[in-house]
Length: 358
Image (tube, rainbow, N blue to C red; front, side):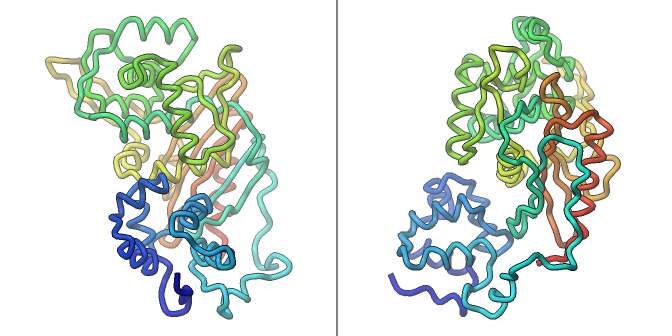
């Protein structure tokens, strides 16, 4: 392999040329490194930087020699040639005194904030601590549904599902009625906006056959996406019952999952909506679903993503917001209340957007 010429090309252009040399399509390369094809497209267009996990897979897939790997990782993650003057300037011994202090008044047990454009982790407060994640679980349920199922399939709402949600003291946020036949795509709205456990369980049974079967698929996805501190036992997030104690994740894993999920246009479109109206048809009655995510109506630039609540999980939120030059993705776990969760999130976003763009 010839030595990489860092100075005369961007990482995206280099990756595109290397992919073509190996006669791979964007989809084929994406499949080999376990990501979405749109991710490869954006990296090659220099619209985003690959995550460290993707870079590690690229190193192996593209057979980068051992002695070049550290420089390659730096170039891929930052876009800065490793031997340039700019790269040297960006390795100060101490943090820049012009950066505001990290918002340590966040009350949540764990919090993470990622600059998705530069792949820089701006805040990591106990970000690798395993915690119950409540309905933020539905992010994984949704992305599996979008990628694995025919969204035009019609699914019957079973009374057995309604009874199970009542039995486990789940949240019937969507108000689904047994006997209605609803398209799988519409059930995504019912699950992600009003956080309907009955929608999530209906989806899981349809795709996985049983809740346990779908949970196995969720764990397979977690492994594929390198969510090493994540384990699922159900599609909804009810981890407060003893038999579901093996259902957990971390703020950091949730941020990485959210970044992956937002690369899917349908997911990104759903989670930024405040309301979805499903008109009545001969197959089902009319439904109006409002989001549980109050951030969308009170923070300029907010684009999602998913709330969660449980007796042990407390108040959780996986969130996203954009400005003209920055895209922030974050997670709050075990906040003390709905108002505190919103305040914690505002603090993190305000601080993140106040930073100078790298």
